[in-house]
Amino acid sequence: MANQVMRGTHGHDAEEEAIVGTRCTNCDAPLSGRWCSQCGQKWSPLDPTWHDVFHETIHEFLHLDGKIVCTLRLLFLKPGELTAEYFRGRRARYIGPLRLYLTTSLLFFVLASVIPNANFTPASSSPKHGHSESSPSTGTGILSRIKAGSRVADLNSEHFDEALAHTFPRAMFALVPVFAALLHLAYRNRNRHYPAFLYFSLHIHSVGFGFLLFTLPLQSFASDTWITLAQGVVLLVCFVYLVKALKHVFGGRTSAALMRAFAVTSAYLVVFAAAVGAVIAFLFYQLGQPASH
Image 1 (cartoon, one colour):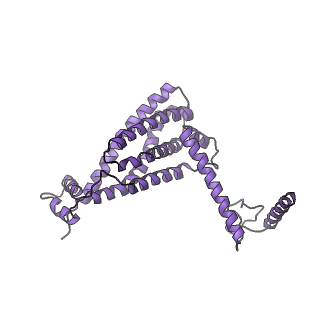
Image 2 (image 1 turned 135 degrees about the vertical axis):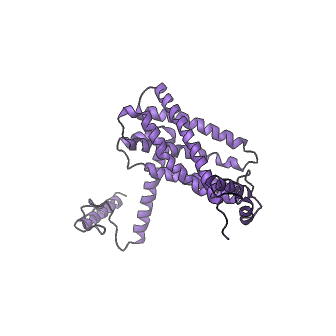
Image 3 (image 1 turned 180 degrees about the vertical axis):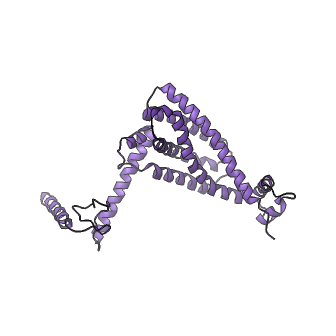
């Protein structure tokens, strides 16, 4: 066994020595090891063997898997610690805030569209009939078109839900910097730059989507009572999480963190409701477009 280890070690050292003096295939900088000091690309043989492919695949999988475990453990079990680690400069071992948000939100919206919703019953009317019934009889103003679109949505709810499913994730992504701005305003005396609150906001929204994932199976029940109750519990848990995370990341007393969390959450819910209303009105406006003759 010792001889095998020595041979493996010598083989690895010989490969390292062979790399030194070659040039990076990406930026043509001279290499002093496996990683290019200029562009960061890892050296790999131009004509890889199956051993090279297998070794690289296992390494990348274990590296990513380790990042996922470390990231999710801190994100859900230690409120605010993932953001604090990011502020400390310890970032290589974790998934970045933006990628984490995109992953959790994508997973949520995909599963929400795949899991059957017992409370959704597609309309039997055709889109063409919907347009003919809902076209505005007088005027072509914005309100008339929105009203016409609402009638189209009633007659063709499946088409409206599909449009909403495409638009709502974008609206949620746009609300992330809004939440960060509210936090920045609440902590305006802490001399923190806005990006710090943006990272915090990305992590908080990732936690929210993560908790909401567990409520999705409940939408297959005939009654929506259970999923409504579960979503209420998630909202309460997220608020408690927010208080703990704010105290951990930005310091201060628990009472101060509680008041800031309540103020920010209240303002954010108002903005969220307005955003949902704006998205629905926009979709109604699009659906209310008069049919071309």
